[in-house]
Each structure stands twice: as structure tokens, then as C-alpha cells.
Image 1 (cartoon, rainbow over the protein chains, first blue to last red):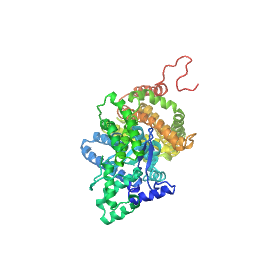
Image 2 (image 1 turned 90 degrees about the horizontal axis):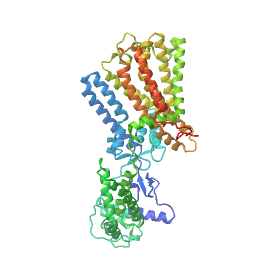
Image 3 (image 1 turned 90 degrees about the vertical axis):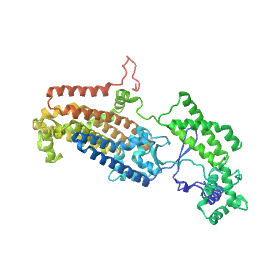
Image 4 (image 1 turned 180 degrees about the horizontal axis):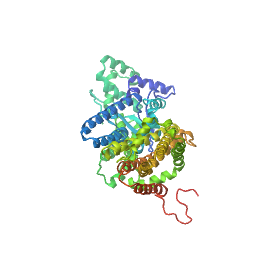
Length: 251
Length: 334
């Protein structure tokens, strides 16, 4: 979702090479990527979600909860006192356990979070446990203080993983759900080997260019591709890049 | 090795891993023990393949595919246990009382903060009855007087309700929410828990003192003694969990404040599981037993006393192994 910030145009390849030559890291400071190293020394990429999408997700959940409560109170109204007792218990569960249920048993996503593509996980990228979820949701009381989740918002913008107080204590993090992996749709024909010294990120940039080319005008494609001409040395850099992309996807 | 060779030689491995994953990601997987053993082995191999593929600069599409498998495998392999560790019964009988005893510093502090003000205010009201009005407006005081009027058929806040079920819902909603707030506000360096505990102590002591002055103790005390054991001790434990959070921030010891807070949170949440259970029992007792005015006070005092003894023995003794002569208990420092 935030892949706009990573390297993905031919211009970026050249820039990252230039930075690498100058001995600086090719990473972009704006990227919110938070990577977790597993015991198998694989870096798992997590993208923490910032305050705004989380407020939106919360609002959607709040609407759903209110709606459910309103419908049930109409439905149970005629049952009298007994129904009211039941309604209070339902209110209690909606207030405290609605998020816990969805986070633990529905893959870390309440309906609101699902709509916005968010997911609650532990710091190490594993699915959130009952304890973790209960803790972070009970501590919403502290996040709410002094009014309107002010403490939670301030806490979120004061750390790199956008954690509210409940997330800090429970060791949880709200991340963007990674988009499901789909095979890229490429249009042009032919294959051409990619130079061996192109890194994975740089290969991705070639692929991204080929994938997006239908959205770009021919002139713009040529303009972008020409940037790589010093590395490609070809008569038609646009076609060369697309063919390289084909060879990246094809087997 | 060329990418094609690599895929040809090892492709089967990640296909098999993908099939296992798809099984595991279903709510009910039909996997055999042998499959679980294969899972760990295959997961490590896929991790290795992904690193190799990236290092050898194979096509990014392949690296991404393998990366996706690693991510999903990691989620399955390192997922924490979902519920309470040993099931509900063992948690109730063994783990929870053990945690309460382990955290008894906070327990006693919390108890002092609840019962200290309660006793002091109770005594103060015996001496100066009008003090109740410094805490509550006269209308609330009237409410309490009406609730425990000896002429009532149903006691407590249930006086006006037709059914006990309504009050059951009310007690669950109200009391458990209070307990949750007592706990959560402890994050403010413990101050929130402290204020809620002291205020509830004053309220309880004040109402008890006022009603005793009016001579309503034959209705008030038999009413509260039944569920009081579970309810009051649960609030004390919720307060203890909150104080622990606050103290872990104030005095983190050798850990960073964040790490200290996290480890306090892991203990506190166990206390909260127990608090929820206790308050469910309390709500049940309060709605269906305590409010019943047809039982004689003597019966209520007896049963209430037994319940207090039960709670105390449960928290103090349950889950301790038989003490052998000369052998220190595990977990105790010698």
C-alpha cells in the first residue's frame, strides 16, 4: 500500500546507485517500514498504520456497535425487564469484548480494520493472542484520557510504530495488511536477461515500470526509460525494460 | 545455480509447504502429527530458499513468492497460545491464586487503599453522622436509605426491578466495567487506581456507616456479606493489577521503562482474567441470592461467612502442593 515510497522508477535505480557510490545507504527516510528479524534471520516487513486510518477504523467499528445495540434494543424492548438485563450484558460485551473477539478469532481484524486493510499483530509479527488483545483493549480507558482518546493519539505520534498506550503495554502493533501476491500482468512480448548486478529492489523497479506502463503515455515511458540508457545501452530502452520484466516473471 | 535449476530442484519443497500452510490457515485443520513435524523442517528450508534467492538475485517475483510463504509460516509457527495456558479449571484452581500470592505486595497495598478509607469513614460517621453529606448529595443518600429499608421485599438496588435477571445484567455491566477502569487507570503511574480504590472505599464505608446509624444493619449487612467476598476482593485484585502497572513505570529496575511495563502487563492480564471470573460469580450471587429478603439474616450470615472463608482459603492455599518436611516449596526463596 505504501510501496510508492520504495524504489520503483528507473530514476530511483539511478539515484540509489549514485547514493550507493557515494557510500550512503539507499534507504528512504520517509518509509515507515518496520522490519522484524525472525530466529531464522529473515527480515519480516511490517508497515505500521498511522493515526488517521486507525481513527477511521475505530469510527466504523463504533457505528457497527451502535447499530447492533440499537437494533437489539428495539428487538428486546417488548420483553420487558428480562430483555433489559440481557441488553445490559450485550452492551457490556460490545463495549469491551467486540474488538477482542475479532482480533483473536478473526485474524486480528475488526470489521472496521478489515475495511481499511489493517491488522493487529504482536511486535514480532505473530497473530495477536487473547492476553495481548484483552490488555490493549482494556487500556483504551487510559488512552481515552483526558478526553476523546487524546492520550492515545499523542502516544501514537510520539513513537515510530504509532503505538497507543495499550499497544505499548501489550506489545502489539497495528499494521497494514500486505496485499495478496498476484502475478504481474505484462503485455509485451519477448525476453531479455536482466544484468546480473541488479539487486532485488532494482528488479522490482523494472517490473513496476512494465506493470504500470499502460497507464503512462508513450512519451512519458520513453522519458523514464531513457534515464536507464547508460546502464542498458539499447536502441529501444522501453522495450528492453519490458522484456527484462518478462524474463523476471517467466520461468 | 541458475534460477530455473533452483526452481526445478526445490520447487516441490515450497509447493508442499504451501499445501501445509493452506491446511493450517483453515479454522479446523486435518493435519496429522507427522505433518507438524514436516512443517518445521520445511519452514526452515523455505526461509533458506528465500535468503538464497534474494542473495543470488533471482527474479523478484520468486523472492516475493518465497517471502510470502515465510511470512505466513512465521505466523503459524510462532503464534502464541490462544487462551489461558492450562484451561479454565486449572487456571482458576492453580495459576490464578499462585499469581495473586506472587503479587501480594500489590494486593495488600490495594486492600489497604480500599478498606482503610472504608473503615475510617465508617468510624467517622458513627461519630459525626452528617459527614455522609460531604461525599454524597442528599438525593443519593435517600436512594440508599430506600434500597435497604427493612420493609422491602427485595433488597439492594433490585428493589424496583421485577426480575433478578435484569439486576444480573446490571451488575455485570457496572461492576466489571468499574474493575476494568480501576485496572486500566493504573497506567497513570498508579494514581488512577489509587483514586478509584479510595473513592470506592469511602463510598462503601460511608453508606455502611450511615445505614448502621439508621438501624438498617439487619438489611444491609446480610445483603452485602454474600457477594461481598467475591466482589470486594475482585476490586482489590483489579486495583493491585493497576498499581503493578503504575509501579513498573515508576521503578523499572534494570529493565527499560517500556520492557518493565510490558512484563507487568503480562502478569496483570492474568489477574484480570481472575477478576472477571470472580465478578461473574459476585453478580450471580448479588442478583439471585443477596437480594432475596425472605431468607433469615442468620442463614445469610452463615452462607456469607462460608463464602468469605472459601475465597480466602482459595487465594491463600489453592494450588500449593503438600508441604514436605524440610523441603522448601518451589518458587520460594530459601
